[in-house]
Length: 339
Figure 1: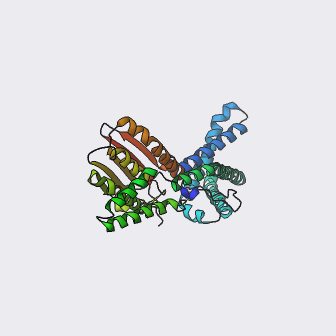
Figure 2: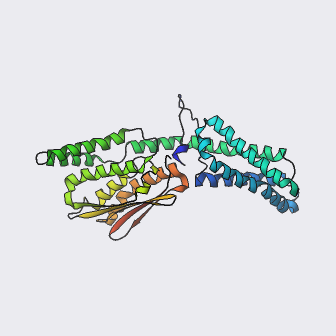
Figure 3: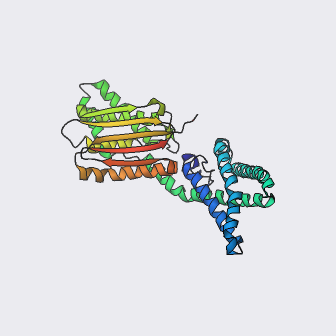
């Protein structure tokens, strides 16, 4: 589910609804399954003789699949202008697009003996209403879950020990390097300012990276040369819109489990690359205690995975891999920008 589909709340808390994101893979798959399911049920209800069922289903497929695919393609192309319309107008616009496609298809099928326009138009209108009602009810059902996901973002997993350690790190350099201590307090303020913002909208990936850099600078105050961070960053991915506060908790986990418990230096590797229509993010850190590391990372990873599923549906994925010496988190996101 794209964040563009996230529910809006009216003044009294009722669910207003938004149009589904017609460019989202999960939405497209659900439309195809719903329409074909409704067509199959309709064909079974209309059938009066089982011997003719196969022929009737074939005829139904001819009438349904062609306009269905064209309608999905048209809604894919018109997704942006439809999303900008008020919700009731967007619903009407979606219905108009579907009816327009059906009329064109029926005019093409008429010479092949598939005449009649009224029944296909009526069936298409009812089917479109059913599909849009399904997405509306699905959005209403997910509204509490989305609110919880936003709360998780708002109270993101900067642990209390990090606050105390950061303040101790600032105090440790206050006399020897007052300028660095001042910068550390500014970085700490920036982190908590980000936590207190209204995190309901996607943000550029560049902002998330900058937040992670501030966090890592604070950790260097106490870990010093023990913390080595290697960035492989593709600037082409910077404009991608991502959920707020999804990257920093994963980087914090890498430091907390992979660097802090050790006595010597350790390396956290962060790869960010754009590959065609996708953005790939990989975070790797050493494994010092395999059993403790796996258990400690599970909650943060599961929370991020749930948020990605809510925001992107099937278009995003988060996978983990643990070897004897390294733990990796890999994230795949669709590239979406404000342009």
